[in-house]
Length: 101
Image (cartoon, rainbow, N blue to C red):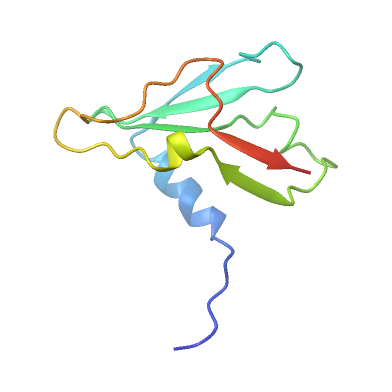
């Protein structure tokens, strides 16, 4: 086995998320300035949360992210079954992770 890169192929991830997912945008839910979110919803009910293209961390010239630590309550939460029992309930002010710039 060779040395595997920790970087992900974002072009293939983008193409997967573009197929069959409906996009919804939440503009600055925390009202702190340019922290827009994107929620992608699959017809089977799966939700994928991401940063919107207008979020301050993904803009051209933004500071590089040095560290990303998921909150233990979110990282250890596991959903199972058809109705995703045990899954986390998140709201506009739920903190999922801490980012160090």
